[in-house]
Image (tube, rainbow, N blue to C red; front, side):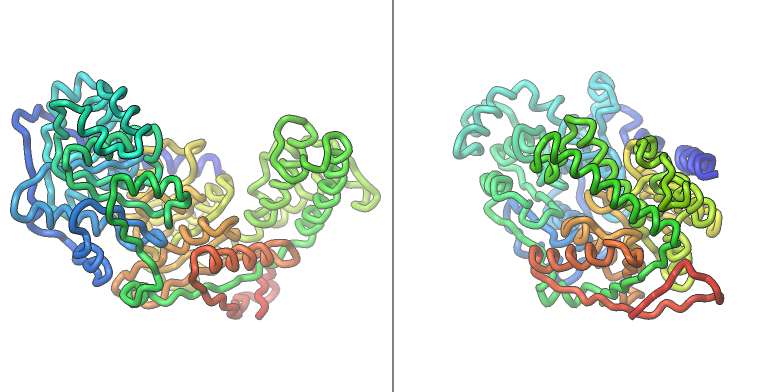
Length: 536
């Protein structure tokens, strides 16, 4: 049922008004552009919040804007920057994005929110000869990927760019080497610029734009860019770096109250038995690995020996089986392991795999009921459910589509199950129509996900960055909601609660802000229903 439901959803996306494959082709010029165009943003269909306006007022030249965390409106700030710079004199704008999905999103943003009807998305899917024939680069507002622009304008200057990057002052070095080259745009916006550092097309574009005197605004959702080296390289281009901090009074006023509720989910006895039995198998495999290869192989993620590979697979499966439910590990190859297939007296002659199959029949996924109940009880405009496992996300998404309808539930998972175009279509589906988005960690960063006022974490975030990125999806005021609710599900009598608390403490230490974790009773609707048990 899940497979057929999933195929049906992909077919729906490909044929729907949200199909970015169709949109991407429609967002490129359809007829040849004969003359070079410029744009002026006369009116925006939104207004900035006070802290965004203050950031904009501070930008006098080139600037790098770093968001802490995601969800504080860098795209809206970039649009206002373009509007300000083009208010008196029409400009030519180049907007760099790292992927096709973001390219479609940013082009639609320019058309809908900035009223730039002549905004186009130029991707590498358009052959070079067709780009030339259509004169695509004559457009006044172009969204594109770095590689596409680099191939058409900077490929012949690779030697000069390499030499400049190797120098202490790459911009000054490049100025003296580029000859008569003129950057063909007046404004450059570089989205997700933290990925551009090094020998990348994006960094080459920023250097050449700076050397030619182009106005540059770079955006990043990564606090301090995680690496002093990256930050140092960007400082060679940007004299001004503006950092969003949620400790800023203006930003605190913008952020709705955040309510994080810990939901302890009842674990079926047979699933708990499998969880504990897997711990015994893992213990035995640790001893085997230690004897064969040394204790150092227990600390890393060695994939060079069959024993080490089996140990890693067992660890992952034991984690997933309670964090994302029994159904998430249904197709794991590690189930073929002899130790999981042999019956034991402790299990009444049955194997661990036998008990697991019995668990699936009685409780397919112990967390799905909790999620359905949370969604049913809350009034929300948009809700996001984060799931680590791709299979669980697909299963849950299809189940929720059966409850709410296909158009009301969007599903977003990684490239192994969806093309980039389908991922972008799913995001557009959520933005334009659906009330619920079920997504894996791909939804945690790098994509412009619409405002949500309810969020459910099926599993604890595995590190502070994931926590912050998830948190950022419900940090924006929608105008109607004053409280952004987050429900974090943890399986009782397992490692999950300790993991959640440990990551939260690291978040507070790394990012410097605190959150209140609330434990509120979630009473059962029907007597005898045991999928959710909640303790204060």
